[in-house]
Length: 277
Image 1 (cartoon, rainbow, N blue to C red):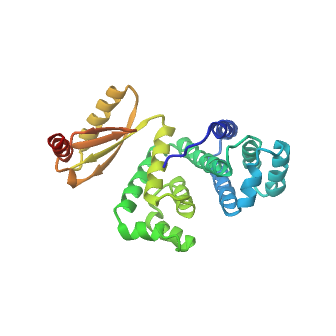
Image 2 (spheres, rainbow, N blue to C red):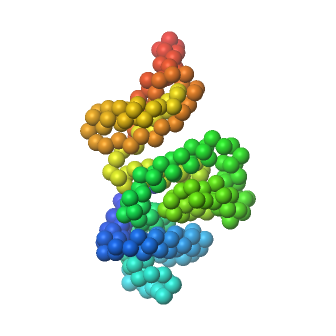
Image 3 (cartoon, rainbow, N blue to C red):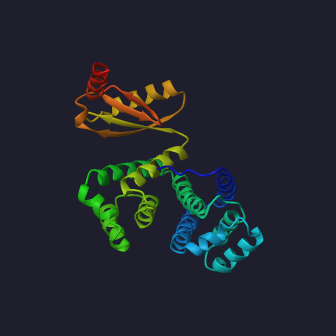
């Protein structure tokens, strides 16, 4: 499910993200952005594994200076200066709960890597790779079961996914996928991949239309549908198209909470509801 934060945590994340983007704007090296994202993910793993640490870092009853001192004592000299500055921005803000602080660090790590993809001109391909991999996982029962098995070895799951994507996706996509598999945080991996694809689309300031079609759409049909939806919603729309033969014909389009159902199956279902009422 999409991240939901209380008011204090939203303000804390906004302040930390502002610091992150200031640091990103100050560097011309995408390798430095990659390092920043990977280090934030490493810190994420640590606070997930150590409940006492995340409680201390999110303790609103303590002084911000004390929380900063704790972070500097733990990470100074072990992470880059940029990563340390972001972490200081995180812990000196007020979070509604330790869980939401963890959500915030995860969001910052993901944003960093998406900014890197944007700088490299790969944001479109990252979005498409995440979406397609999500469809593959969702459509392969054994794979989804293995990845979702809480008793399964995490390193083994990561290695399994890496065999599927190695050399086929960008470095940003690989890092995002590996971290999702390592720390799904209660999400099914297929759903998590969908969320990541949506984040990439939002990074491009576009809404996402999830399109289910009874048959594969041609490139011309995709372009026409994109143009039509962009006109209707008065903003750019990114299409994620999935073929679903159960629709029998037509399209089903979901944008946010709105569903446009032009499929034969959808019309039959509506007819049955009307007859039953």
